[in-house]
Length: 161
Image 1 (tube, one colour):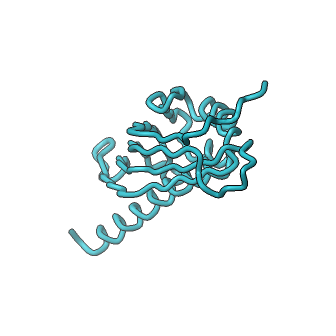
Image 2 (tube, helix red, strand yellow):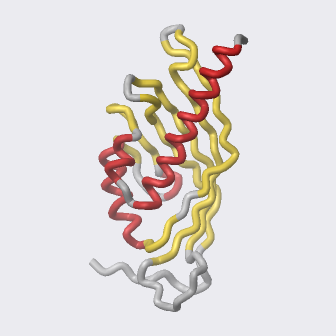
């Protein structure tokens, strides 16, 4: 591998990592405009293993916005990122697959006990599929595989419609 190719691969790896970080920040901060902008026009996400839905980025953003209103604090920690670049139409590096583990502590919004401890913690693995576009790397697919969750001993606050 030439030095030029190594530098290009490093730049791609950093750019892909930035998309994954932006994904976590968008969900944690409720920035649904940023969330949608991270996807290709045909990009999809699948949250069914965590009790959610599967669909296009716009539908998922709307569902997340509603579902995550229950939590005043959210913090995705996405770690152990394994990045693999692939081929599209014989051009090296136009696609990327990222496997990454996550830990996601959250705090219920209606909890009035003053504690800073999370009420709900879950963990699992993401499978991200990315595509190089004219606008940079974008998510084509996000699949969540929740492996575990822990709820507090006390009950969660009631949802009022």
